[in-house]
Length: 232
Image (cartoon, rainbow, N blue to C red):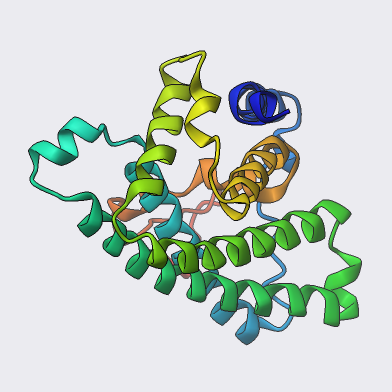
C-alpha cells in the first residue's frame, strides 16, 4: 500500500488533473469559473478571500520550488538544509495561518448564509473542507519540522517529489519511515489534485494575468449612429 500511495497514486492524481482539466475546458467551458457570490456578504468574502488566496498561493509556490529545486543547485548556492528548513517553517507558518483564517471565514460564510448555501454545490463544500484539513495538517507538520531543524526529513520529501517527475521506480522508498503526519499531508494533497478538475479550483488555471499589462482605459462605442456611450 505504501508503494501504491507514494509510487503510483501520484501519477494517477497528476494524470486526472491534466486530462480532466483539458476535457472539462473542451466539453463544459461554461462551468470553468469560480462561481462568485460576491453580491452576498461582500465584506466577509473580501477579507476571507484575500487571506485565503494570498496564503494558499504563497504555500503553493513555496512547495513548488522547495520540493522541485535540485539539491545540487541549492548546495551550489550555499544554502544549507537547516537554513532552508527554517525559511520553510517561517514563511509556511505565516502563510498557513493566513490561509486557514481566510478559509474559516469562507466556509462559515458559505454554510451560515442560507442564500449562499443554496447556490453552493456539494463539491464546493467538500473541496473547501479538504483544503482546510490540508492546511491544518501542514501547520501540524511544523511541530515535527522544528524538532528536526537539520532538514533531514525535508530532503527525503524533495528526493521523493523529484523522483516522481524523473520516473524513478524507487520513488516510494524515499518516504519510508517518514512521520505519519507528513504522509497524510502528501496523500491528501494528491487527493486534492485528483478532485481538481471537478471543482471550482480550475479557475486557478485561468488567472487574468493579462490584466496586469492591459491599457488602463477602454473605449466603448454604440452601434447606433449619432449616439455616444457615456463611458466613451
